[in-house]
Length: 210
Image: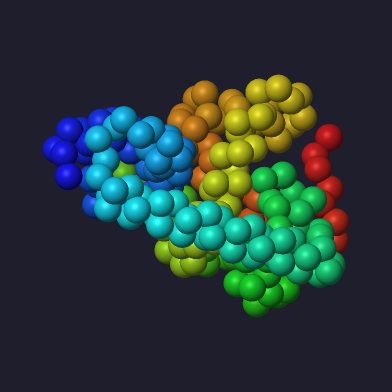
């Protein structure tokens, strides 16, 4: 194979990378593969082109399987009353709602929302010095998958919050501006989890602040 071909490919997908499967790089790879295969003058050998075509077909099959699972999760969420209530929360869709139910059930094993949030690793760590307490980063204990989902959901809320005037949007934007968007996302995920505890343990709907 010509040594020129990898050099032409590398700027689009950081090739070869031991972490190419990470989300962002995989997205670049998905977009680049069809272009590489259509470009007859890029110097790729027949053998390497066949390898890339097989990889492209595998990714398409994986996309189809993921779409099937997403549809199945949506159906489960729609059929479960507790999941439907959780999806009233901003940043919570079928995947987060079903993952939370699978992890905490009706949440009645927790005394309060803070305890449930702590079990997921979303409560801030505290440090005392000179009689003053400082809040540090989140503890990151507990269920890493659910914690990651909740933080990603919170980031999605923050991205659209500047165009809204409700109390939750104003609060999270002030926090993001004063501290950092990542701090705001963790704080919002913590707040969402505490509200979810109340909704699950008391079987109530979401009552947004006015």
